[in-house]
Image 1 (cartoon, rainbow, N blue to C red):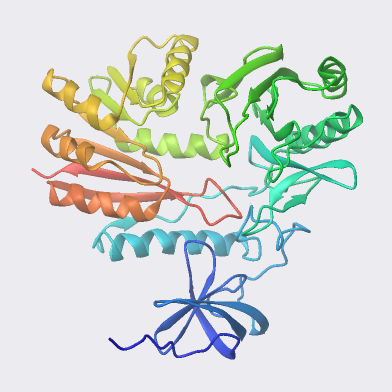
Image 2 (cartoon, one colour):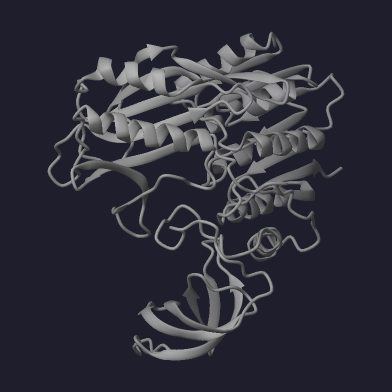
Length: 458
């Protein structure tokens, strides 16, 4: 078998024109059909690159010089943008980001789903695409005797220390700065991955954007935190709005952030926030959307696509803490939510009580196991809503939807590629995809969410 020969060699310097963006935010140039992925390059640009890596089907390059700039190129606002791996698209104007994200959704629907006649609407973006994240979760390290905290440098475990992140709520920046300063003052040592010594692994700050309530979570290797009473006393004095200080213990050698044990050090075990008119209790481990403003846009679109009259039975697969379920319950006769994480279902039940919603019922289990049981027991939903993880829906769940034949399916997706794959399966099973609405939940990054409306073919 002939050995593969790329049309370029490693360390070659070549002039290229960039044609596209990958889902990772890299520019794409092709040499004799061979794609080269290049960070910080934009479609329409011409420039010089250095070839740095070759694989069988594609390679990677480094941008050395730009001859012709895209009309959408801008100077990144963040001083550590190129070192930090948190954002991928700050060098692309916000208008350009929305155009690129719409194209990303449209392209995968056509390429993977073979859905070239589906209406894809322009992306619903933000008026202000900065300072939107309500949760900050950063690793802690040490440098020159002091604590540092920030995101990992791209493709490494080196922490880029930061005092401000432009996509984080300002309050979370304040929390991180104060926690580093106060914990450092009282002798708390950062966890060291190599030696498995030290105490503080990560700090998480959660912020109720409507209520202003703040939770701090210390993720530690050890049960004890040195001088913890003094640290709490100083934090509560220095940071207004603190409602909860929590410790999570993770004593294992692992990259997983959270351990099994969580305890409240001070204040409440939850903070509260609103999305629209619905109130949510958020614990240290709750999954809660990090951009509440756009979550409201996303869920209102899901509610619009469900088109409820008040007589329908609705199933919400992958319901989490009940966010979509409770939006649907405002208009549905009955909503049934299912989720594999027991703590999330406990949160969902608590959130239903919090909002006096008696028409929402929740069950723990895999959607692909529980929903077929419901179907066998005669629970035949009029509308089925799915909001799966990035890997998309399980095949058994898709098979059940096709067998159950709800009149409408609303698919909320955080990964356009698996959305396209699953829509194709549902189309082959008797559904028609009417329209897809992308929503920009994560400005300055390569991620895009989308809501698809499907109807049963008659």
